[in-house]
Image (cartoon, rainbow, N blue to C red):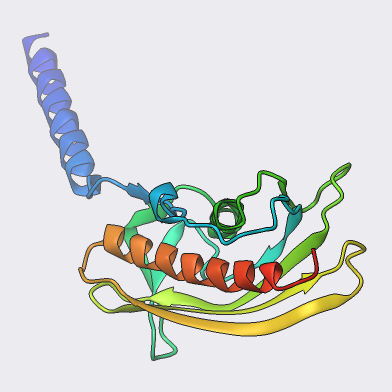
Length: 203
């Protein structure tokens, strides 16, 4: 009986050590979550809209599928991209891009009459459609955004404005937080381009 108890004790100790070893090996850096951020309200100085708030519908907005994933993807000049191990987007990047674009345009145009595609009862005067063809950056380097966008009439059938916009921003740091901030600044720049075009249309 004493021999069996000794063997049982040895097995328990061995099992505990193996569990601790496996758990220790699987422990990695904690996952950090990031989001794109809109234009700070203090920095938005909306141009005159003639005293009337226009209504705009945002979307569809499309991003390349290779960046529209949980892990933050980096890369720039080569065909090889890197996927972060512990840095992730807190929401689908396409949703975050659309959300921030809508918030920026609301501030820049001084209007709360903004809706995201698809809308049901909302009838916007203008519809903003965006196809992002490039949205990448490198930690400790630059971020670049290239987008094809159009402003459609209230029926969504006629393109009143169609344009290609390109922007670059320096990250200024090797941290993913700085990368996300630089990407947000490129969305702000795109928002300003679209807002300027909207304000130039007949109201």
